Length: 356
Image (tube, rainbow, N blue to C red):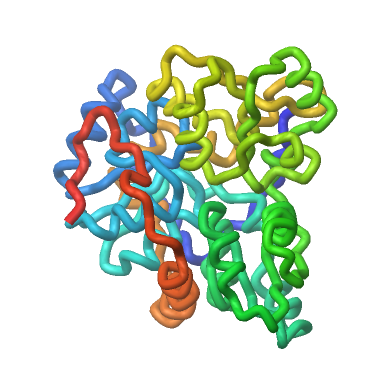
């Protein structure tokens, strides 16, 4: 069964297109979208970023494809004037936090995140106030306002390393993903409490159906994202970020791999290892329908084109909030292990700006 798509609240950091903006009904339906997007890319000195969970056609025209933080850092290192972030809102917010002088747009202002929405800033502030002795560790899948209440931000690739290196005599408050937090607690043995949030995609995978799939493919290893619940992770041969999963399945000698994360990453897997078979972990109904993020799927080529024409929806963050959110992001970068080379995948089209 596909995940329910709960309406999300658009934060005030996202400025919608105004009434005078160009709409799809104003556009010649016969235009070549790829050519027009490429023209705008050059005219506006734009860099287009696509998360691994975007549709293949968006991945293929992007300048960079990768994980959210790596994409924002790569864009910050370019001389681009505009960042077009094909992902979800918190990703575009991070891009703006790291690149305050660049224009940052996203194709659909409703492309939110269930983890971000599960953690309203006012409620989170009260939760933090109730635990004044705790170090506040916040997953990057959160709003700028929640980041501003945090001591350090983490990603799925560096969370374990950072938590291990926090003062051992301090308990940890982890938000908003309870599954990622629980996984890190099991790995580190740290004293932790959790915000009660979960990803609607990774929370839908079924342990029972995964066991059935493994029985049908006994030699297929399982690669899972740590946003999955423990019922999935305990069957995994590899647990890691989207980039880590991509590297694992490509390098593993097995011809068939079971993957428990959003299945649009299969596009990069198939490009990197075309001879392999990738199976999506199933939901409770035995299908892989739950493996598509409905928010990521809101972005389309048409919306991408219009966001560049209108320079909206646009992310704007006041400087006080930006600096407060930047501080825990900088703490994360300070504490992170050395980055591996090639953390993002370059688009096959190679039309983007080179890193400075």
